[in-house]
Image (cartoon, rainbow, N blue to C red; front, side, top):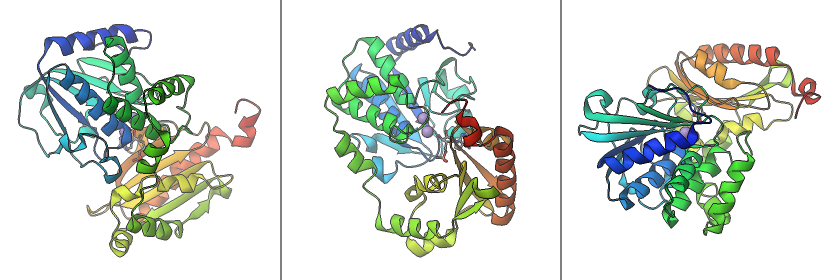
Length: 343
Ligand code: AMP
Ligand code: MN
Ligand code: MN
């Protein structure tokens, strides 16, 4: 297995392009509860491979969220517990470790070459080839560079899928991964015909009624602790039942906790339909590294956006998470103190 890339980007992309040229059957998968980057990257890559005459099969453990179903060929993404087929190559996208694909395929026995494409700083280099760029805003951005290096003109559906990946993973160009590079790429995508307004309507102005009613209940659970530095929101199964909302409707809810003035870290606790299991989402401002906390509990993510799944009662889970987050906030110092260093 090779080392993390960086300067080696051109080389690894060339290797991947060679593997694409020399093989015929491709499997593409991404993480459970897929998001805009995982879906956008899967669709862009599959379109690209199919244009090269490849046989492509895409499958995830969880369905494509409703807001991304406007993307062309989103219905080509299968939902499967296990894929019992052999492939020359598997592309695993946007997964910091293999557990994230939910055991969807036996990679060892069914796939000859595994390509890991990811941008998480803590990504395990589980592939035979690892195109892992923590400085990239998204896998969509990494794919853009790969397409560019192939010298193949990208087509409309790829442009749209890549744009959705970058838009959503940068939190609408607001998160710390919003770089000059990703704006340069987005400028190219807009020149190729993307309407940011239309995409925004599809992705963000398409909340369901039940989802909005759930948001209203969720905002009612807001608690602010640690002297105003931590805010959290909670969702119980009862709240889903009452409103008829689905888990995917909760996309973006955690941001409301972080939005509170003076708050350094926002947390969303979601009770799952598996007994005593909770999904925890963390969002932070500035230097507070919530991925450290998520990792402590078997999860992961980025400095300002991370998550994990843990067992326990709502009370226990909250206590453990709040303790861990307040320790991290104390250790890092406040935004005010940091202001003189760097904004
Ligand atoms: P979420 O709060 O579920 O939107 O997740 C925020 C970020 O944390 C995502 O971009 C994922 O990369 C990462 N993440 C969430 N859950 C996990 C997990 N169980 N393991 C590793 N990374 C995770
Ligand atoms: Mn993702
Ligand atoms: Mn991503």
